[in-house]
Image (cartoon, rainbow, N blue to C red; front, side, top):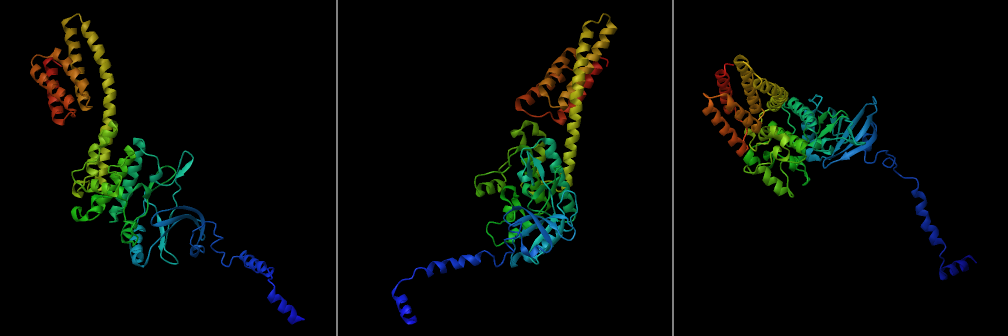
Length: 434
C-alpha cells in the first residue's frame, strides 16, 4: 500500500507542499542575526566606538568626514566626534598633522581633546552649539545669512583673526580657512575648526578632494610654481575672502566654472570689485582689501597682527569722523549766530569782533569738511571766505579750483592739500586780526 500510494504521488502533481516551503524562509527573518547596527540610535555611528561614547545626533557630512554629537561615557561630557575617511596612504599624515591641533588652546579655536586611528580613525573635539537664526540652528559661518551688518562683520573677523594669530605664533597654519570651517557659538563667537585636514585632503586618493575650496583658494594654492608655497599669508588671503563675503554678501572671485574662478584668482591683471562699488558705505575698507587680497604674498599683510592694527586705525579714524560730524553741526549753529551778530553790529569794535568770529568759524568748518572729504560743503565754505580776505585771495582762488577738480574727478582730499589749506586758513585769520 505504501508503495502504491508512493507511486500515485509521482504521477499526480501535489502543489500543496510548495507554498509551505516558500513561507518557511520568511519566518526566521524576524530575529536579526547581527542586530548591533540596527539598534544604533544614530545611524552611521561607528559601532567600534560605542564602548566609549553614547551617540546623540548626526550633525553633518562633508567630502572628508561625518560628524556626530556624542556623550563621553566616562564623564558624561558632550563632545563632537569627527569620523574621517582615511586610508593607509594618509593615516600617518593624519596623525602627524592633526596632533599639531592638540597644541592650540584659544577661545576662537575649536578645542581638540583626542585623536586616534584605532579602533577606527576619529577626532574627539569641543561641541559648538551653533546660533539661533529665525528659529533654526546655524552651526557654521557658511550657513549664516550674508551680508551681515558692519558691527557683526567686525566682531566675527576679529575673532577669526585672533584665532589665526594664536596658531601662527606656534607655526601652525590652516590653509583651508572658509566659512564652513568656522563654527559659531550661541553668542556668535567664531571658532576655527579642521586644522591640518587640508594637507590630508591634498594627499587623498579621491579625485574630488583637493585640500582646499576653490572659491576661497589663494593664488599659491592654484599655481605654486608662480606664487610659491602656502604659508601663514595664505590664511590671511582666505581671511580676506571671508571678510569680503561678510560685508558684501558676495565673493571677490566668482565664476560659473572652476576654470573661470581659477583664472580670476591667478591672473595678476584681474581686479576684484572694491567693496565701495557694491556699497559706498564700505569705501573705508577698499585699502584694507587691496592688501588682504594681493595676488603676491609679498604685497599682502605679512602678519595677522598687521591686519588687526589697520582695523584699529580705521576704527580710530571713524571715531574721529563721528566727533567731527558733531563739531560741524555746532559750528554751523555758531556761524549762523555770528553772521547775524555781524549784520547787527553798531560800532567798529563790535563789527571787528564779530567779523573775527565769523572768519574763525568758517576756517574751522573748512578744515572739518576737508577732513570729512565733504568737498561740496568745503567749496561753499571757501567761497564764503572770499568776502573776508584781500591779501590771500589768489591762494584761496587756487584752493577753490583744486576742490572743483577733486569733485569733477571724484578724488579724495589729499593730505598735501589738507596741509596747504591749514596754512591758508591761518593766514586769513591773521589778516582779520584773529
